[in-house]
Image 1 (spheres, rainbow, N blue to C red):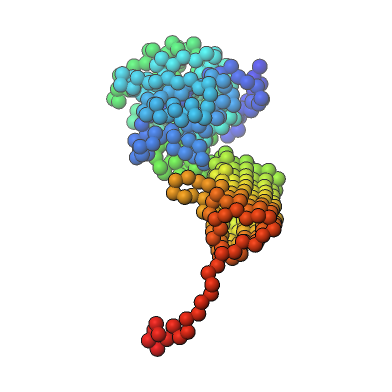
Image 2 (cartoon, helix red, strand yellow; image 1 turned 180 degrees about the vertical axis):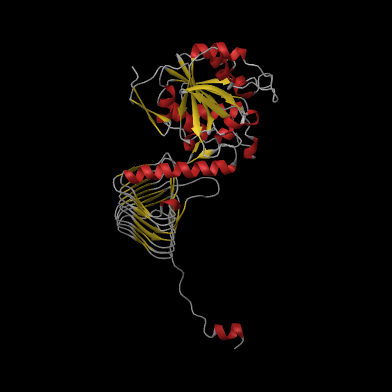
Length: 451
């Protein structure tokens, strides 16, 4: 049983719903549009917000309350479906016949759902949350309709409400002077009794200026039949649609603020958080510090880590370590008890108990505890055809400006002298050194410059 507590404040309805109860609700996500205002060959719903396609944010929110989710596709349908299937299981798909049945109502033609209520979402609303979805599914109304109160509703159709029931949706051009004073507008999400929805969708008409089938017409049908249509007041921020690159950037800022606020409330320290970017897939444990300009990408995991100014961490694990300033940790790296300094790049490597202070590249390598990587050291891991492995043991000192030509194995307790080009394995306890004899040419300066 769903528990509801309904109250009123400033004429808004707030619904607090007992969380943790799985609902008998189906979800349909409309993701068929071309998104021409994005001016991109990428389908609109696949544009990313904080590291994840905006459609995936809607799916994630939906999966928290339902196990019956259908995504409606049309534009680049195969591409969108392939991306969804690469990340999710048990998602249903419906292909809109947009040639015969364009519009939001047309998108619902032929869609079947299995539960008693159907929640209809838009794939370009990445900021929707579980709480808002739960609020939209509560109560006994035939239709719950999301509405927003705007200080300036200009350009929007007005939702006319009387006695806490929706009476009609009136386009601005059709509003009377009194109706124009209404500040309540349609937010575009509906929760509908499934039996009613299945009866109304076939009755939709495209007898309008755009010759499209509008989902909003089901509200008029319900009111005409004296069904109950309840307005559910929602926050504008969560129901923002993304229709342009500007909208995308705006949604990104909102999402980033949410991510960083939650992390800081968990104890993560951030210096100038507005300058920091954190992927929604990243996770943090313990006491971490992110300095200004830090970027955390992919499914990175930070445990008691200190990431210094303008450093980048991508799909890597940083544990009890510090990186930067201006360090770069590329995918599939693991740092533990390690110091990586400025202008050091690490890629697909494991460093445990290591110091790499500055100006080095460590790629496809394993470096053991107590080892030191000097300035200008490069693991030459790519021969033009394939990547090769560099293995550095424990307590190895690699001097400045060395090239380690992989594949190569340096055993424990080794010194590699500065300036060495190493292309052979080094046995334990050895000194490896390659240097040409130092030569002086007397008076060369004066001969060269003619002095």
